[in-house]
Amino acid sequence: MSAVSSWCRWGLNEDFDSRLYACLANRRWAQAVASARHLLDVDGLLRLADEVMDSLTDQEWLEAMKAHPRIGERGGDAPASSTREQSRAMEGSTATLTALAAENRQYEDRFGHVFLIFASGRTAVEILAELRRRMKNDPAVELDEAKGELRKIALLRLRRLIDA
Image 1 (cartoon, rainbow, N blue to C red):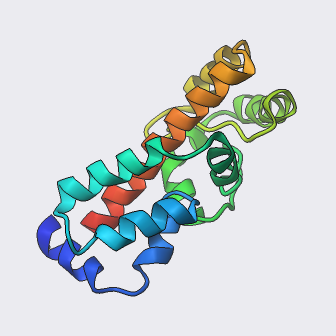
Image 2 (tube, helix red, strand yellow):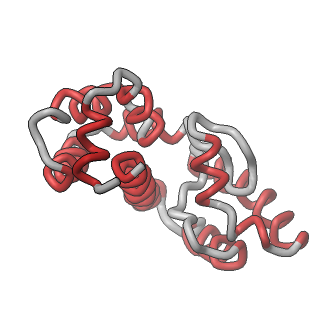
């Protein structure tokens, strides 16, 4: 099925709003994107989704982050997506995954939110190195990095939703 015909199918589906929320756990964002789905083509919708993210407050981003499990854990508001996105990382050694779990908690203690990274295609070693690098950030810089990673995750999920 082409992206255009798939998009038309989603445009008529009442479940679309909840599927959007699984892309980014923010009702205002999901409603803005859903309300435009009949007016825009796929590229226009992706642009709009990205633009609406620019208007989210730091508090809205932090709330959306709560919908994500820690790297290496199951759960969150979109567990199938998280599992798929982290699949390569979960092939890491026991020692690396143990370190990742421990350092995830240290990150949360330092920054007050889950460590977010665009994990698709990344190994556990790569993710652990990035977590260690980002632990050196000051909180404002780190929040910006985390928001950027969540943006990439949300747009990937939206693209997959449209292409489904």
